[in-house]
Length: 289
Ligand SMILES: Cc1cc2nc3c(=O)[nH]c(=O)nc-3n(C[C@H](O)[C@H](O)[C@H](O)COP(=O)(O)OP(=O)(O)OC[C@H]3O[C@@H](n4cnc5c(N)ncnc54)[C@H](O)[C@@H]3O)c2cc1C
Image (cartoon, rainbow, N blue to C red; front, side):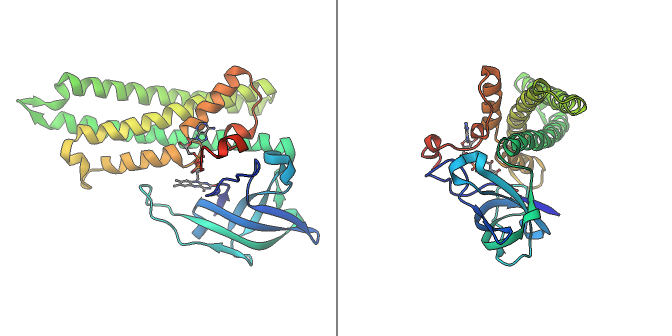
């Protein structure tokens, strides 16, 4: 199993780029720094570590390395308790002067790597969006069953207009989110069959729409499902409280809906798409600390 070590707990205030550094040394590289929130770090055999190779180039000075999880200097911190998604664990990864050979470096350099990263964010984010569609569907199905069986004033509570309209809204969300995810996936298939900068832009834009909409829909679906279950929704006998907690994980675990919006707006405005769209710049770093 592999784990991706991208995020860092503390943003770099001095310049765009990571605090984790890679230094060329004896024909290979030495990695030093700390990565945060790494999913499955404690069970991975290999880590994909993003680090700053050339500080002066900002986000374009990044490099990626495959590191054996049991290499000297790699320390996986104990996993931290989380709000949801209890089936997996995330931990910090400390890299204490970890030596890797030259061929551990992957993914190119400069713009090639940053474009590849944006595609990676969009495609992985789309998988999160697909999970969000599943969560919406589950929340809706569970709610439909509950409001059909639970009665008040002699009729199922689903027959009251306030509840019926909520169900209608959440049904529309799930349908729209699923369609957006399929559309984005089709755009990537189209791009990969015949890659052009236009087809890449269309795939990135469709992914940003799908990610933003599906993640927001999942949170609404989880929240409404708990509400429609009343007090029962708050206790652990029913799945809906878990769905609500897991929905928040979807919203913050990878590309956030705000970052997806930012990608969509950048593409619509015709601005250059560089990783600073989703990664902090010196100007924004003070906002995020
Ligand atoms: C359970 C879990 C598992 C994770 N797994 C991994 C993993 O395996 N590997 C890994 O590397 N990371 C992992 N992460 C980290 C995850 O990718 C980040 O938490 C996520 O990308 C958000 O980054 P951040 O926490 O630095 O928040 P920040 O970037 O500090 O964002 C804080 C808030 O500001 C908003 N924001 C940020 N940038 C912008 C912008 N440009 N425009 C508008 N709003 C913005 C965000 O949407 C968010 O609401 C995981 C996180 C969690 C919770």
